[in-house]
Image (cartoon, rainbow, N blue to C red; front, side, top):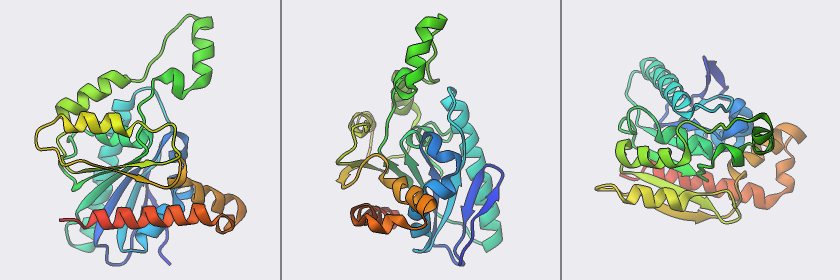
Length: 244
């Protein structure tokens, strides 16, 4: 059985003969231990022959700095793997929630990848993402916002994000999703080939089965709809990864 290994801030899962590479950035606090919270999703993709590199982090206010850090760490892991197996690999970037934003802010503009699969993108302001901040900021007399802010983020994507191939997945029961605004932004660029699809599930579908499995020893099998939604997601990601 393939085992997870850690390289600095990234967790790696390598099948014996990987056909391609998934570079994953998860959402907010879920990404502090992505090898656990996204385990079922990522191991399902690995079982289909995809190498997995997922960046672990705690959320902060400087999203551009975190995007740069993630890009450097994932690039380092890719070089290490390619040297190990003796061949170049096509990389597909995969983001969930805040992780989508960090991929979109990567310093290479997405050029060194085949494309981005965005799961449940959101780009909320700090006061909505951190409820306690909205309560405390006025009392303490300060205002804090993510850098770049939501408006600045969309401007940066329009100007500097160069990857035309993007698959935006929105879950039908997700009330946090902002994928449609991202699609509008991407479609405003020249030669954009971004696509948008709906799938069954909610904002936590990419992680929920992994969380349940880690907490209750496989209890996700008692919720067939959760398992089915995740299996469908794995199939969709795998299929898109090999579209010419």
